[in-house]
Length: 185
Image (cartoon, rainbow, N blue to C red):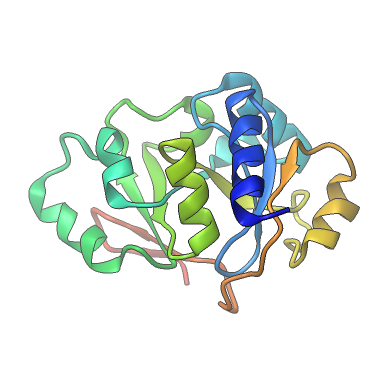
């Protein structure tokens, strides 16, 4: 199946409230529509992830995060623009736009603009950010291939976008935008 066909199939699954898997810069990710209650609940259940932890949102461009960045002081936009696209996740003060299951028990939402061409194409075709969390069960190592995703989740996913990882050795760094504190190296 061509890249365009895979992206179209995955986007259709996202629009139906499905959960998908796709390659990112360093590990395989699971994603869903960040505004769909049932999809978010299902994704967290599949991962056996504590809902209080929250999840990352990934976009294909900074403009896709405009609703999440509305009201953010202008001086805080510079670090985002300087580090995106790339493997940098920022914890941004929630302005009320984030779904509670995306934010989890936090006052900030985790945002990243991906440099991975398949992730960017997926978000562009979807028309905005999607959830991006490692493809694994809680406390297990993340999947590093589509075959590993299939072994872990069997037929529980609605689409798997085949492709290569982006060549990074570890998942994105996570840094608090307001304090600058490094949360995950």
